[in-house]
Length: 416
Image 1 (spheres, rainbow, N blue to C red):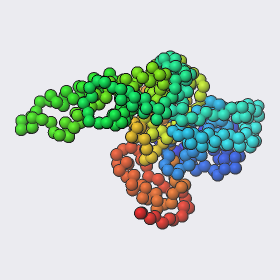
Image 2 (cartoon, rainbow, N blue to C red):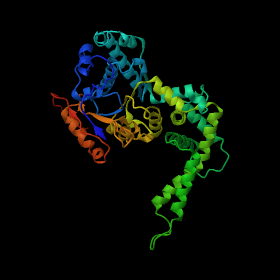
Image 3 (tube, rainbow, N blue to C red):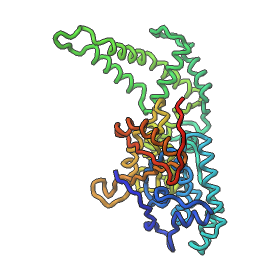
């Protein structure tokens, strides 16, 4: 994994002088970025992983990265795609980027570096696209879903509507189901299993085969001398849970069939179907790479397997492009729904950069940058936070120690 803390801006293919992060900050009337932030802002136009700690100025740096790319003629605003998890975060990032671009257009800096006026025109006539990951997947399905086929007007089920549909399937089920669980609980299990299958891009048929094999191996494994005839209770409990999952699979399949019959998809479907599109339809990949010249991936530690497959298929292959993933394994919060902090270190090989080496056909791992100065927290809080995160560092997840900004004053820490 390659790491760098230098702002490399001289690889820009645009004519004239290269605009530095400090130039942009001065023109926009903003504080000059720190060396760590400047390295990210002016990174070469290629894939890059940014590990940004809490309070390190992530959103401002991402916005400044877009402004730097635009100011140096590396991309136009309408060819920038930003993805994050919540509508609130998407709105905040979009507002920050658009505000900075408006200030850039009115600063006079673009006239200095581009007397033709083309960059100013691009800023005035186009805006970046900033969406949630699921909204982006939904748009891909709306535009290209017929290739799967999925109807463009497919109804998106809310969590409540999905639960009601699954509950109708469970309540009307007339086959045997060996469980003492009430229909409400079974419905929750059906939805959870359907979501996990979608998130991990696994079919019910594949899961059925693997689960049956696993149960058979455990139950028929030869016993060593003096070993009890039956496996340990903990292992038998695991087998029982797997067999219950086998019973749920027909219900999951019935739920999927009912959704198709009603022309509906749920949130898990959006991502898994979009991933299938990206993996199997080269025309879709070409269209998205033609539409966007730079991509920002926020909170990348919270992406799951299907999201990783989707993004890697769209923007990780072919000629390397400016894909900037920002995340922090210490802030992963969506593990319960299939997210994997391991996607952060995997980014560097999922999105290789061109380095002239022979090992990967002239490609090498993406550069990694660190933003570890916290502007939000005093030294005492960071000392405690670093101590709490020590087990994560020991586990090899790449969690680094945060440090306070220069001149940060002391604080009192009270533990309730």
